Image (cartoon, rainbow, N blue to C red; front, top):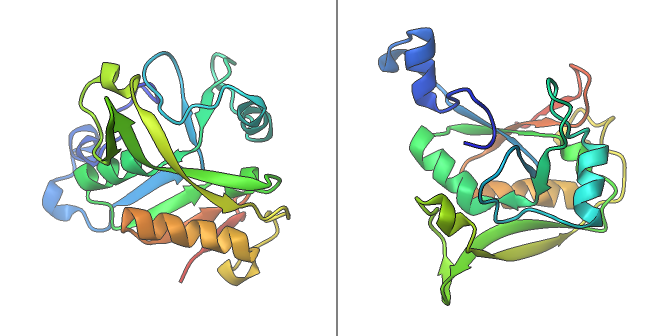
Length: 191
């Protein structure tokens, strides 16, 4: 909900394409280096400030059909771990890393607090609970350099590499591809 009208879980592959589950191999979770959302609903890491505006503008976060501005926020590891759990990701494809190139620092939502309960690290089942969460963030230094020309992981600035490795560590799934621009060849395959 709030992202697409499509069924984008691994179950959608079987029902939408008619592929039997036993024919599935690797399951790749495609995730932006930050989050976006459309419409209403809970969005714990949503940014209502100049950082959010910068993500919208640099990332061109406007609906293709409607032209409406998307809601944006920091990457939410609790949400991503939940998605990985229900889909069985074997790898991640991290897109739009280049959008974060000019930030002094980047944040990752790593846990929630709800009703005074700290380290609430499971994804809530109810949308109304999403609206009540406070997020605990891990703050990492930004890299303040252009990643769009990188075609190998080693060509990324060290802090960008650290960001990717931290996502892998927190989710427990390796990143296999990193998008660093809009061109078809603006992809790094991580070995």
